[in-house]
Each structure stands twice: as structure tokens, then as C-alpha cells.
Image 1 (cartoon, rainbow, N blue to C red):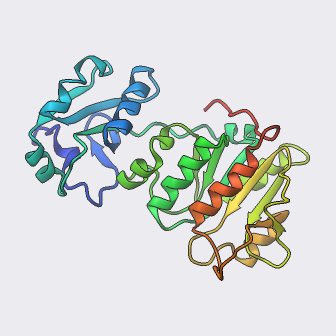
Image 2: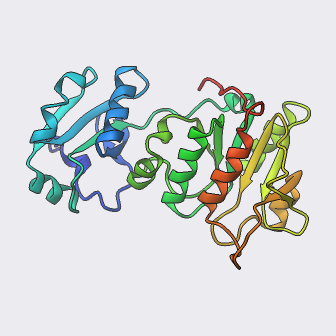
Length: 269
């Protein structure tokens, strides 16, 4: 069996998902100075295993004293690094880290502010929704089938939210959502849907324990899924527009969930 090349995880990254490492198993790639520096901080704190950092010669000089123990520093000239990655790479830094263990299933019950994504198709939308959920103080995300949480584009667009907020990935999130709701009286499941009966988001008052369900980009939530929710909320449209992008709508509604007096405490993963 040929020896493992530490540069292999960084090859042909344009459409990359996760990569497999012979020692650490499934790993992911983070790119860009801000994201890599945040990843290194998580590594030094023991929250993630950072396997290696790939840097241009100039960028590497600033990192040597900031690497977590056991992290390899790989250096290459900019043109060669772009050729390796498979696209013009101008950010100077990339890192490879082990995909962490998923949050424990029982911890889902402790969430008071939950984003539910039964199905998505676009990795950038997933990254944006995770970023908003983390930034706006939600306790976690329950997600069904869709783009990988640890693909290069999801990680990049999320700006590190993928390792900052618990994400439970399951084939059928509705089963766990029903269990979450039953765990505490007064819990509410709210659909984001442009239906005639939907409540205007301006007047919406989320329950103290609330799960917001966002549908897929093309069709939104279907009738069966809407029937699983307690009520619906909608953002009024103007200027002849019919809807917002799911990530934009999610950010607005999650902001309403996190207004003063409404935000719950985040469960410990």
C-alpha cells in the first residue's frame, strides 16, 4: 500500500466533499485566513482535531506559533498551491481537520430554539442557514437529507458555524422533531410557509420553546409536512416578489426567535 501523501486532502478542491484520512478517518477542508484561524483556535482548545495546515510560504511564517499540538504545517508557493487545489487560490491558507463526532441525540431535547431543515439542495444555503443559526443564538439545527455539512463550500459559507452549533443529521427529522415537542409541554413547531393562514412575521411571537421548520428551495413544505406543524409564519412580500431565498427568510425569522427575552440557553454538545 503506497504511503499517504499529506498533500492529498488538498487536491482538486473545487467540488470537494469530505476526504478520507488513513489515521483520522473522514476529514474536511477549511480555507481562508479567518476560517483557518478560527479552526486553529478550536484545535488549541481541544474542540477539534486539526490534522494539517497548507499555506503559502509567506502565510506559513505567521502561523508556526499558533498551531495546535500535532498539527503539520505544509508550505508551497502560491502558483503551485493553486494548481494543487484546482482553481486560482488567493487566500493563502487551508486546513484539514477531522470531522467531529455528531452531537449526542439526547441533547436535542434540551434545545429551546431549534431550526429544522427537512430537505435542502444547495450547500451554500445550508452554510448560510448554519451561520445565521449560530450568530442569532439558536441552540441547534435538526437536518434531513441534503448537502453535506462538511463539504468545502458549506464550511466556507458557514464561516465556522459548522463546528460552533450542534447539528443533528437524520434521514427523517420529523420523528425526532415529534420527540422534541413531546419532551416539554407548550413546545411549538412553526412552519415558514406562504400560506393564506400564515401569521405575519411582524406580529409573530415565538413560544418560549420553538422549532422553526424551513422547506426546500424549490417547493417549500408540502401539505403533509405543514400538517405536522402547529402554525405557519410568513414574511410579507412587496414589489411583486413572490418569496425570499430560504437562507434570507431563515435569517429574518431566526432573528425574531432570538429577540430579547426569547433566547434560550444552548445545550452542551
